[in-house]
View 1 (cartoon, rainbow, N blue to C red):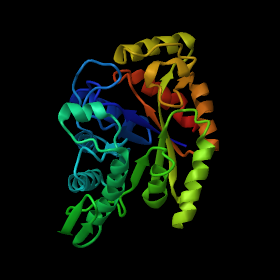
View 2: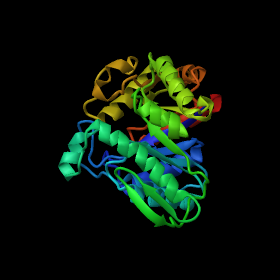
View 3: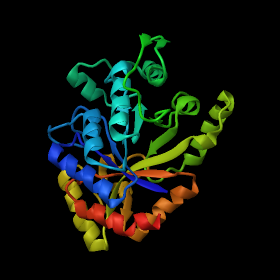
Length: 319
């Protein structure tokens, strides 16, 4: 299993700290570094710097050497696919082929209202998600490309510079059974859902298998990944101290770090990874048994570099 980091850089993360996090993740041996895509701070925090996801990853491409980079996930409501396709291709080119474009339909209506961005009904957003992927792949292809969809159009686009990867991988986030998993089956290179414990994961896989059968695609070619927050400590006292750092970053967190299901409204649908390094290895290993090949650990206490060092020293080697 591969282990990456997911950074919520809209949570008042300045550029110097972002560069340090990116460099540390690269040097410590994490598989990948992912950026959420939001316009405002979430998790009950007062307004602060909310850095742009794509710009952040362009910077990361310059200050790292080997780590994979990606969005988790870019909302198709924020950018026309022409802009998204060009930005993704150029980050991939800049990084030497280390970028994955993660996309989703968008969910946080408040930030759309705040910035005056249209937030269509879910059906239209899913239509736009599918068209965005098709549009991007057309623009990334060789030669001038045209696209004629319901919401987006392009005519004889050259799309230069092209991505370093051919094809540039696309991740789709979400688990909606009727539309999202159909798009995953049809178009995604990687499928991501949030939360550590997913009691209905086997059912979701069955639904995805049905969609793959319907479109004539082997489910085995779709990489499976999970994203969830984490808390790690060498023992209970250390775990509690680190949780206090997390609470300083996310004031709405509550509860016992030994019971991740009690950690406020921001635990994700399936809870946190939490415990000693060996316990995290056990929790991650159970996901591996379900066919999950990559986990993005959501690093909320950005300045706690010792937590990353502990993961690198005692978790990554066992995986």
